[in-house]
Image (cartoon, rainbow, N blue to C red; front, side, top):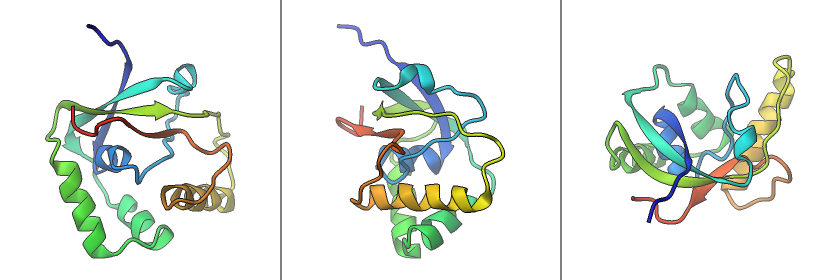
Length: 136
């Protein structure tokens, strides 16, 4: 049996955060996910890690995740290795955002994403989420 799905590459820690269901919104400069709405997408983990630690500020300040929990998430993401397709996600609703979205609105999107990952409701903002077994 052959399964064909699109594939998107992420650097760590973002790949692990997507596969662990913590990161539920993905932004790209091009509308890569639009044709994949309501489809399954494979997550590839890039060889290189993300440079910088903006993600840590979002996890700790916006989402209220402790340093210990962040380290646990990093270890969880590392279990996949690098240069591999590590899991599948379902692509939900997609939309194109203007590149001139006010900073306040971006903060609200971050908060909405964190509420969703913590069990709240986030109408129309869901873009990707884990599906099926995390390990392939």
